Image (cartoon, rainbow, N blue to C red; front, side):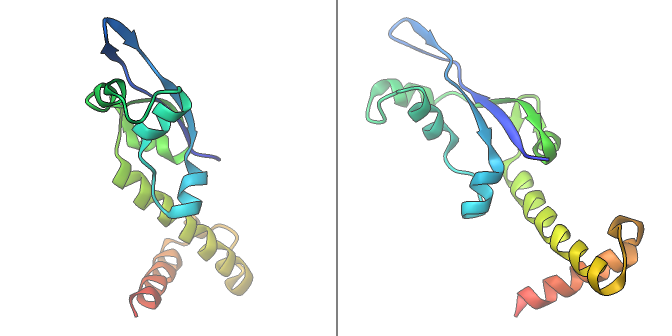
Length: 133
């Protein structure tokens, strides 16, 4: 399942209220760089705000609201706030688990690694050990 979320900001500038929105496919960003980009900047670009304007500065002062989350990211959206660090860590762990599941299936004939938490934990620890060197 893909990880998507809608980001928006409500702000006022010169007596006008603006509410730029953008639906984000987070997996694309995570695959490219391993972290989420500056979402305020993405909102500004997608909604044709000049990045060197007072309007953009006003936009940056307001909190970004997140909703309509699907996939793993939905666990990290609470009260319209996204726990970015929590999501990034969980996404990276899910990628590792998918890779370890393939190894478990091919080498240990385990179709569902979640049914063997002892083996799953051992593979995760081995992975961490391999990455610490």
